[in-house]
Length: 319
Image: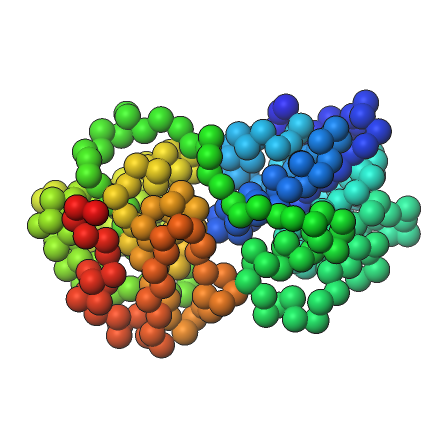
C-alpha cells in the first residue's frame, strides 16, 4: 500500500472510494469504508482524499493505495484535462462517492462522454444514484448507509478508531486529563462558545484534579493563548498534534469538551465522554457526533449555554 495510486493495477477489479474531507466527515466515513472493503475483499481499492487525511486513511488498512486529490483552479484547463486522463487511466470498475458534493460530482462529469464506471453517489446520471429525496435531511451515518445499501452493500458498521492513532508519550501529558476544543469554523463565530466561558470551565476542571489539554489548528493559536493566559495547570497543544496523535490523545482522555468541530467527532468515536456545544448554526440531527457517550448541549446562541450547565454535563471525577 502507498500514497498515490499507480496508473493501472494488475487487478482487474478496481474500486475507487472518494472522501475528500472535512475531518468530522472523514471520521464518520470510516464505517462505510470498512463496509466497502468487506464487500470487495479481493478488489484493488483506492481511496481519493486530500492531504490532511492521507496518513489516517493509509493507516486504516482498508485500501491498497491512497490517492491525493489536488483540485485545479477553475481556470486551469490543462489541470482538469490531466485529472481526466489520470482518472480514466486507472480504469475503475466502480466508484463509491462518499463525498457527494459538487466537487466530487465534477469528477464524474470529467468522464463525459464516457464510458463511465459504475458510480454510487448523487451525480446526475450515475448508475447507482442515491435518489432518496430526503437524503439532505438525514444524518450523515444513515445517509451513507442507505447509499451503500442502494449499491448492494446491505450493512454498514459504525465508525471505529480501533487500531488507529499513534503513541503520545512524547507529549508528556499527565493523567487524568481531558481534551478541550475551543476552535473550529473561524469564519462562523456563532459556532464558538465564548472565550470567558472556556476560561471559567477549565479553571473549574483543574480544581477537580483533571488537566485540561487544549487542542486545535495553527489558526486557533491566538484563541488558545487568550483562553489559557495566566492559568496554571492547563496544557496548550494547539498546532502541536497530528491527526494520528490527536486520536491517541482522545483514546486516553477522561472526557472531552468542545464546540461542534472535527476533533469532537474524533473523541466521540473514540468512546470518550464528549460534551459538544451547538448553536442554531448547525443541526445535530444532520451532523451530530456519534459515539458511546455523547452529550449535545444546544441553544440558539452559544452565549446562552452557561458554564454551570456544561459542568453538570461532564462525567463525575471518579466514575
